Every structure is written in structure tokens, then in C-alpha cells.
Amino acid sequence: FARPAHAKDAFVFLGATGDNALRENGVWQGVFEAFAGGEFDKVGGLDIHVAMNAPHSSSELTTKVNASLTPLYGVLTSNSGWKCRTHAVDCSVEKFISKITVNIWHGRDADAQAANMAPALKDYDRLTLYLSVPPSVFGAWSDAAIKNWGQGSKERVHVAAEKPFGTSIETADKLHRDILGPGLTDSNLHLVDHWLSFFINRHLMELRSLVLPKLSVGAGKVAKWDSTTFSRVVVTEFETRGLDGRGGFFDTVGQVRDMVQSHLLQVMALSLVDTHTTDAELDESKLAIFNKTSVFSCSFGQYDGFLLEPKLTYHPSFADSTLCSVNLAVDTEAWRGVPITIATGKTTGATIYT
Image (cartoon, rainbow, N blue to C red; front, side, top):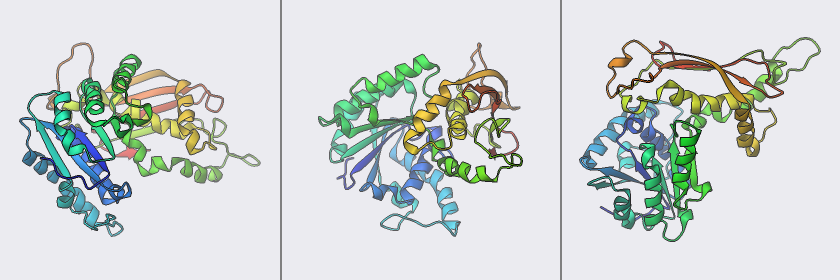
């Protein structure tokens, strides 16, 4: 059903019942924390519209979202430092769910479903289409959104997608072209990495400025953020959990594409860019690091029992790693000769983010 839009923005969510959406620290929990933090109010209000296919149902979605968010809400409210920051001062799961409108379509025709959703979306100033679905349908949904929701203005529609974005430079470039091809402006395409929203990563440059003066490098010497001070760089992300039901997502992806090619390369770059890099220069500075980065060795492994995880398929020419150690070199003046390692794994017996 369509209800009058009282908000300026709409968040249109595809893949709302998937593993990545419902899991702990998944999309729904992230959106809920934004709601509770007052972010919806900051943009003049935001409603959530979910596009689903039969045989899924609204009641199924409500049940699953409630099951995902209720434990998180309990954790938040038990924290003495937490505060509900919505204008209505109501951060209950029920209030959040009341902001959701569901569209269920029989069949998988992006254009037809987008046309069916258009009346419910006509009054919003801005629409953000969040694609938590297989990349093979990114282009079709971008085209459908521009065609049916643009209202003559391609600037009205935004598209957001997260990794894994392709399997190579060539397939990533094709996905990029598929999304922009219908006329979406490049500034309205948001390739998201939620790892960058973590507090320590948002403030890593500030942390560096606090750490640097405390480093001891010998009498009469001044510590610099480069190879004269550091002899090795190690980025570690170890998890105690396994797939937690995400076999359908993880299958053919593995730990490298799940963690290294996105999240942990970002952390590496944030750790290596010049100390005086401004926010405006950060993207170009990270790209300069990536352009000088090469891989010289890797090692891989799987945890015991991985092959018994549900939703995995057999592929004869490769295996999905759950543990990897990637050794890199960054051939810049500041970091030349410094060995760099990214190590990450699931079910490691420890939670370590360093």
C-alpha cells in the first residue's frame, strides 16, 4: 500500500531479508542506529521503502526485522551513556518499523516493480536505492529507478552499493558502467564501505597525530610517520564467529574479497597516507597509495567444519578461504622497503581489530 510521504527522503531497500541485511551489525542494525541517533531528522525526515518478491510477505519482514533489532535496542538502552536522539524521543523498534512501507512483486522484473512503487515515492525530494542484492541486477535496477522515479530529474535518484563489487578490474568497471549507463550522475553513485564508519577509522588521522609525538626514536631525532620510524606494518582483523548463516553471501567470495579488497585495504591506506593530508585530499591520497601497492605473497586456510556450513556450493577450480595473510609492498618514498601484512580470519578464537 502507499501512504502519504511526510519525509523529504526515502531509503529504498533491496535485499531486506538477506543474510547481510538481518545479521548482527548488518544493514538493518546500521539503519536503526542511524534512526536512533537522529540522522533521519537531520535530513528533514526519512521513510524506508522495501522492495520484495513473492513469496516473501510483510509479516515475515516485520518478524525478522524485529528479531534482529530487539536485542540491539536492549543493548543500547542498557548503556548509561546512550541517548535516543530522535525529535520524537521514541527509538523503539516499533516506532522504527512503523516507518517501513513494503512492496511485494510477483516475479523479478525491476522495471515493472519500480513502476508499481512510483506512486508511493512521488512526494519525496530524494530517493536512495540501496542494493543489497546480487551485482548482476545492479544495472537493471538503476535503469528502472531513473526511468520510473526520476520525474525528469536524474539528480533525484541516488544509488548505493557495497562490496563485493566485481571479481576483477574488468568486471568492476562493467558494473560501474551498468549503474551509470541509464543516466545516473557519478556524484549520485555511492560505493559504500561501512568499515569507514567505525569510530576508530573515522578518527584514525587524529589518533596518528596523538601517537606520533609519543614515539621514541632516539636522542635528538624526531619521529616521522614513515619508514624512518616504522619497520613493519600489520593490519589484523580476527573474528570469533564463523559464517553465521551467511553461506549464500560468502560462497565464491572468500575472506580476501570479503575483508581484504575492501575494508582492510582502506585501513591500510588510512594508516599510510601523509600525516598532513586534509579531508579534501584523502581520497586522492589513498588512491596514490593503492596505485603503488603490490602483492608479493599470500597464504590461505579454512576453519574445521567450514565445508559443512549451509548454503555453500561446489566449485572445482578454487576454494573459499576463511583465513588469509597477504604480504604487500608500497613503493612510495615514505614506505619503500617496509613489509606490510594484512591478516584476517573467521573462527580464530579471538576478536582482534588492530
